[in-house]
Amino acid sequence: MRQNAPVVSAAPTWRWWGPLRLALVLLWLLAAGTAWWAAPREQSYDRARADVLDGRVSAYQWGDGWDVDPLPWFHAPTLHASGTLGPLFVWRTPDGRVHWTDTGRFDQVSLGGTVEPADYSGPGAVGIAQHLRAAGLEHRAGDVHPLGAAAVTGLGLLLGAVFLGVLGAGPAPVHGTRWFWFWLVAIAPYGLGLLFWLGRDRPWSRSTAPVGMLGGGERRDRGALGFGLGVLAAILVGAVLLFLHDALGDRWVPRSGG
Image 1 (cartoon, rainbow, N blue to C red):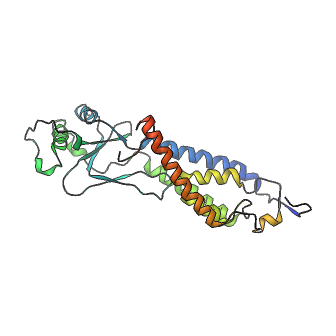
Image 2 (cartoon, helix red, strand yellow; image 1 turned 90 degrees about the vertical axis):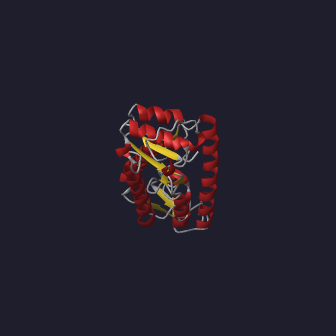
Image 3 (cartoon, rainbow, N blue to C red; image 1 turned 180 degrees about the horizontal axis):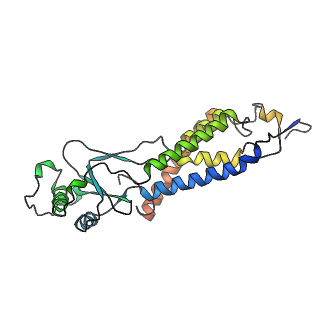
């Protein structure tokens, strides 16, 4: 801080900012935990067959690939299908968790003639289809959406709206321009930029602040830096999650599409 720099008192609204910051962090934890719980997890062909035969399939869907939207903070991948049914078989169990398996990796199936093989991508898919018919579960076909997906999306929109409201209508950021924080929070995955903003800039959290820094002084980080840091964060977080997935497995670090 420059010596003899004039200071201004924080607005009285800082009194509600502390509880709001805590609420935002708790909402982020709720959204992240729900998204992790409901994320599709890869299972073996035998697990899929066992769940079907035991009736532990509340909904199922066929597809041949995953579509992942990189924009939302907590996104749920969606299954796309073209042509025949399979090879991906996705199902939801009564506890709300979503699982999937690649039936194309399994071809030791006895064809019983209860389904039309031409409708499916291979013997593995035909085998699952036969078990679905035998268990009386064919009517449960449809889009498999993780339980809580709508709530997670709503929480993400709420967090984003509060951030944009404070960024646009609140006091000027101290440690970066508004464009710096906009790009960093928008690009960094899983809302991590929001947590960084809450921890580093903290509008209304101090009783005094230098006027020179509040007025868009040269010390503040610029939008280009925020954009670059957001891209870097996305790359690093993706690499870390890939490493953790390989080390801990799909149960703890799910990665849709294998």
